[in-house]
Length: 151
Image 1 (cartoon, rainbow, N blue to C red):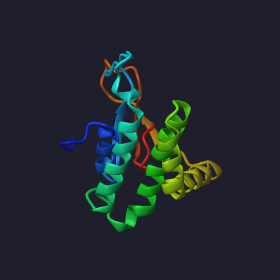
Image 2 (cartoon, rainbow, N blue to C red; image 1 turned 90 degrees about the vertical axis):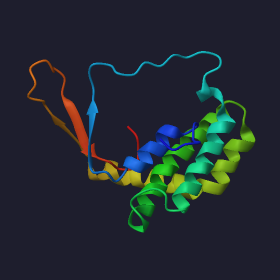
Image 3 (spheres, helix red, strand yellow; image 1 turned 90 degrees about the horizontal axis):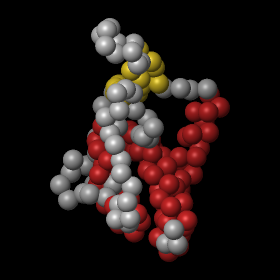
């Protein structure tokens, strides 16, 4: 984790791992539990919108791996993140934040939309299921090449 980043910390980590090659996603047993309450950090929409600006500044400074070769992929990935928080901002009454994201970073949303449409039209599914040899594991393990988007 990057010191000083709380809001969007998982997305920061995903950007660091985005070009790491194959990854493993363990489907079972459950390893994360999430509790919703009135003071959840995820309800602080303006802080998450500001977190996007921090991540974009880090990307512009070259602090994420992949370099210029992966700039379009990374921008498309950011487009998905921006679209998500734009919707949340508008839905929760933070109209200025939502519209600012749309007007300043709309081109990244278009990249994300185009990339998703192309993958859908090509029938591309970058996830592969491999069963582990271990006797105690009944669930498959999913691996796949990172595509700058969390699943």
